[in-house]
Image 1 (cartoon, rainbow, N blue to C red):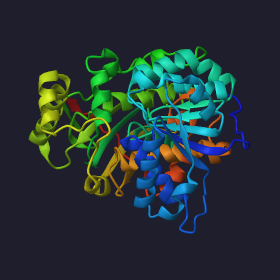
Image 2: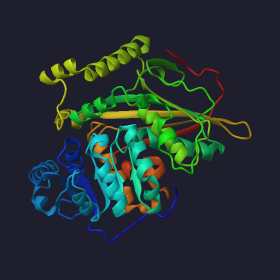
Image 3: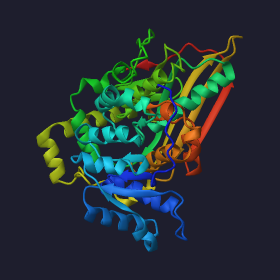
Image 4: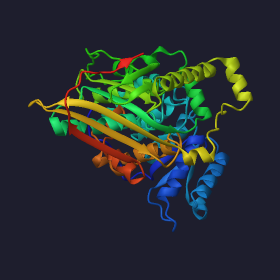
Length: 440
């Protein structure tokens, strides 16, 4: 629902990072210290760190400042004690900031009180949720009131699902510019990926195990749209990659574990933006094996499913924890993995102008600066929050519960690009080929 987003310059802080004592929260804190506190001690952004334990907050603040080489200014970063089980503490925290960034999950277990506090306090909100049912819950319970109060509640602001969501937005903007028509079918492939995972990720995967909502391609469109938006599933055939495929643009491809959520978020964005991509828009994601061929795709998909089964079954999971092959809550990738990680994703679509010109449009997004699920996820959620705190005039007008593309827009691309992300948009005419790929 479009309305005038609140931009309250009278708040004490631009951003509060809630959950700063957790693994990802500490990375967000480190990111703010490194990029928004200068070597001379000037704070370019007014931010604070929040969590349940003041002692752990002090430890996290010290660690973040040390790693960011800002030890001299540690005491200047405010700390706030707040607990998801204490509504009064959440309300007090929210009233002090323009935007709350939260990394406290699993969100289905801990997240709702903070959303409620943000809406009540007219404070914008962004998170890293990977649980579609939580998005549906917040939309149904708080979406209308948030929209009426000019509050943006923005979900999925990390590796799931900013690269997918933003690249599709940029692709469709390029298609509309070239042909005055959107690409009705888009495929996105992960072409490069290196990183780790944390105990929080394991907990979220366990929370979703066995949920049919995870694999319902239209779940968010059916459960998380404003009442004023009607939705009918596309009449075109939907062919998700749930094991392996051969794609005309990417060759052999395997199942990408984040695809079910990312695909839902992209379709949800389309509906939230008034079906900017078309009412028959079709979208899917895959893991490209590049030149690896059939057996590489087969092996990759089998390993993903074996890993999911191992996490799902308690005896195997307990053994993996005991052998320290799975991280416990609060644990995550090593510093080496955090620093050496990278990713690249490419979205490809086709459209046709009224004059009959056929265009192929592609958008590549990536980063070589760290683990996409943690180091760069910290960057993505931080910059999403700063879009709302510092660049609200450049954000979309959509208020209520929404996605990064629908609620924030292309200003997020501008901020991420300045912090080391790369975006490449390519549009050119091509001959039509009748080869849509084969799923297996």
